[in-house]
Amino acid sequence: MKTVKTYLSKDAQLGVLRCCLEHIPDQRDGAKISLADVLMSGYAMFDLKDPSLLAFDERRCRDAANLQRIYGIGKVACDTQLRTVIDPVDPAGLRPGFKTIVATLQRGKALQQLAYYEGYYLLSLDGTGSFGSENLSSASCLVKNKSNGKKLYYQQVLGAALVHPDSRVVIPLAPEMIIPQDGATKNDCERNASKRFLPNFREDFPRLPVIVVEDGLSSNGPHIRDLQQHNMRFILGAKPGDHPLLFENLTDAIKKKTATTFAQIDPKNPQIMHSYCFLNDTPLNQANPDLKVNFLVYEEHNAKTGKTQRFSWVTDLPITEENAYILMRGGRSRWKIENETFNTLKNQGYNLEHNYGLGKEHLSENFVMLMMLAFLVDQAQQLCSPLFQAALERAGSRRSLWEQQRNLFNSFELDSMATIYTMIINGFRKPSPDIIYDE
Image (cartoon, rainbow, N blue to C red):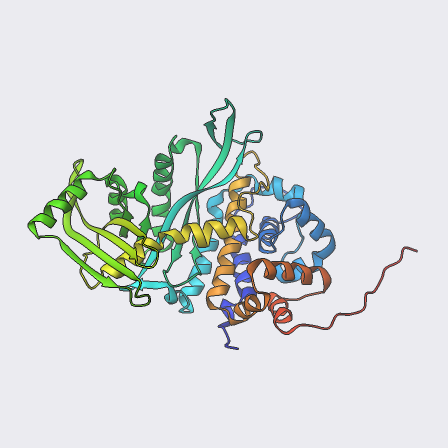
């Protein structure tokens, strides 16, 4: 088995995260448990994929020594402390944890595996729901009036992840919660949340070269100018109904033979035909005639099924016959924020849409941040840790790995996550039970 640099191991990253949490100011006087201990307890709940605060509280009573040793917790927080102490914490205080974990991947050259085109990384952005209820609500909830006259209280988050078309690993970054003031429509909400996300991203990663990939809601003049202001390249979906001028100009260019059209057979599947048509340096729309973009329309025809798919994007990257395939794959990798990020968080143990607690201030936001931190560390391990990769392969699935991890945590005195992964890979001797009888 290949080795991994010590500071990239799961146990080292837990230590790094603990140090980040210790720097968050604690506004309480005379607290019996440190803020870092409470936050690390919350992180451990999501790292172990406990389905509720109650389940974690039962673990606290049963497995406190393991939690203390593996997660560096002095005193493990109970469910009441998790709710009351985390609620007033400013979610911005958790952002450095994302920055620091990603920095370890950069330092260890592991992040380079996700570099896509000319040194650029694909940064996929999209919004998703994190909670919904007709009965429960908080100040951070959005409200929707349903057709049956009832109100739906819900929360949304703008997620961000570094993705690659050839990798199932994604590297999530600090999300931006969508708040009630952001607007009434999906477009308004994500647009206003992105106004906060972009400068925060550039503050954390001032020199990271990225190509932002997003859906058709994002290909508007104000958002593109924001991306340009923060030195971000882009490949953004563009639909005919939203951009009639682009499609009209492309049609005229085809007639005048100033557009480029060509087709190629897929190098891996001869049943797939790729067809491209593109036009460089054309106005985005009538409202922004001075904003020039490059426009790519792509069709994929499957000879076996007879189906044809059609996509179109605007980009600031010059399009050529040599890079059209690369840009197309980059644009289509936007879906990885849905499949490898949101779907994993909702359906593979992280319980994104589960209500761990709404609180009065920032409780639900901070739980989302801690959950995303746990997901980030897991993805970092899947990217660069042979020990984690071998344990995942032996377990057969993420859900099985989480279940075995919890079972070992419950059954043995452990000193590290490395021990847990090694036990899953190699197996272990089961001791005879030492039954405790009440005297």
